[in-house]
Amino acid sequence: MMDELDIKILESLQRNGRITVSRLAEMLNKPRTTIMSRLARLESNKIILGYKTIIDPTQMGYTIQAYVLLTVRRVPGATKPSQVALAERIIYDSDNDKDLPWVEEAQVVTGQYDIVLKVWAKNLKQLSDFLIRYLPTHPDVVKSETMIVLENVATWRNRNMPIR
Image (cartoon, rainbow, N blue to C red; front, side, top):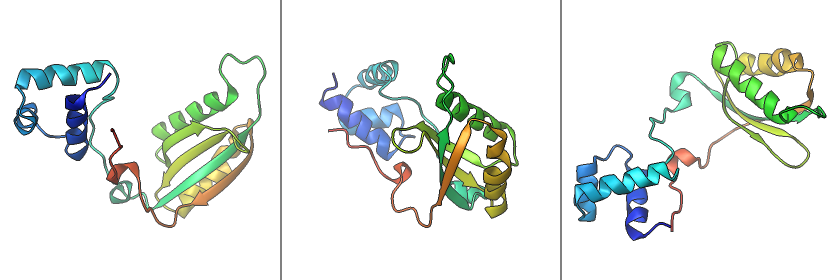
């Protein structure tokens, strides 16, 4: 259970993840040791999952964002669902092959499609090669549909999660 102090800590960290414990304690008018123990509890309870720098993909040369929806052939009796295994393989390949787009997110979903990939490509050729050359190398991919993002209106990067 979170109390008002936990909520204030989380709200402050969402606004500024680089704030020092001392400054946070000062802002919240609490002892530094109290803030440190609260942070440790929030982390150990997996409410705070980590701290990281958020980099703008466009500043790194990724000019095209797309969502790739995949329908996957089911493999009965497999130790891991075929959708999960395929998504993990695509992520692994993306992380290890500079010629492939960066797969920022991959989800197994309900509905007409089985997997949704959020993909960042450096250019149209890289995205095209991913769709036309790379994906067909996976025999479990039955069909795909791609939606290129025209404009980002809101992302998690520029919005805070409501905590209350």
